[in-house]
Image 1: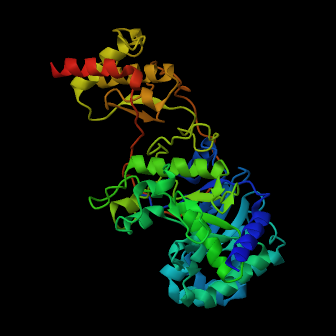
Image 2: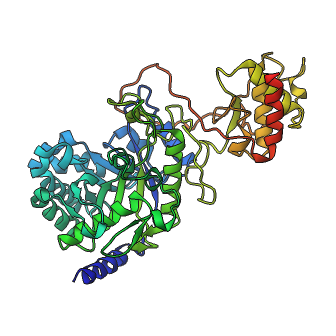
Image 3: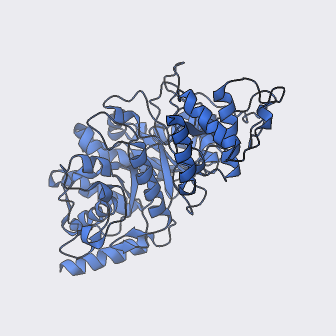
Length: 498
């Protein structure tokens, strides 16, 4: 009987999702001391080829800026608005009129998230959650938008108990009075179950049971993969196991044709002293592997080839987020639009390319040892075969006459000549990749678009977020020269040590 259930589940989900192309989206939070203007946000999204986003509200400024961009948008009803909407059909209708009808179709709104993780973060509102979803959907029907815009609510993966083995997973039964009518609603309206999956927290809370590589999508030998004893299916990562567990949990309640979309997942790039695995390397590994996993249509072990569309948490580091340091460091970019790290996405298309304008530069790292900078500069202008003549006195890049400015020019020239690979911008750790053009005056760097380019001015209201003049973060990816230059590196270090 269990095998029959599994076969029905696989077939139903395959039918529901086989014709849909998987995609990667990005969440956009606004807890920044300097929140970029909506037009700047949209410019970053376009430059990065991000075509799917999720907002945590229905901010008018963002919705206006997104008009005619082609970007597909999930908007949200914040938890604090649920009570009013869940108790009043007219309140729901007004919300849809003000936040959806006023912007659609110029702004391509595809879904409405009714609250977020309500069952686990605001359980007192659970009783009106499904009502709120139904009222919002009724308002969409009245506006003839119910076929274009889906209604759902993101759930925390923690509502699934005994998630491994996936074939035995089930929802916390205390929530069945809410989940059963919710799943009925999702099924009857052709919507999807929204799920937030955080392997980082699963790993941190497992007391060593979950290996780091298993959480990070790193390749595992078959002997290290987790095996579902009921199906003998092997799982090589937490993400797939949790997605399959969700499908089995729905099947346990006799719902077998509701697709899953992952509305939040990611990995922090920095943490407190008790969060040693919140690092840029691990964040890069997780998100790079996740994007490849989804875009390559790998699917899950029980649904190979049927990928689950996923939204990365999140676009920006949110420096105003309360809690541990990791809470402020889930972003792919800082407030300036500079990448926190350079994603490793070879052969994964143009989505989330290495920089914000397809232009990146290699610059001397702020605070680097001047002696190490001088050694790296000497190498670049010598064995590195960089033409450093523009740095000579009287030439365009002579001023300012200091090692940081001269090293930046040499580093960037070498970096561009080597094809802008991350390995070409390290110089023994004294260089960083940035999207900020270091050109100045008549000194124009390789790859520069010039200093007179201006952003297209789209009139849009500012976002409803607090701003200040505090500086944004500026952390960039780093690489190395590459193994072929190992001998030269040793020579440079030898000279320094002497």
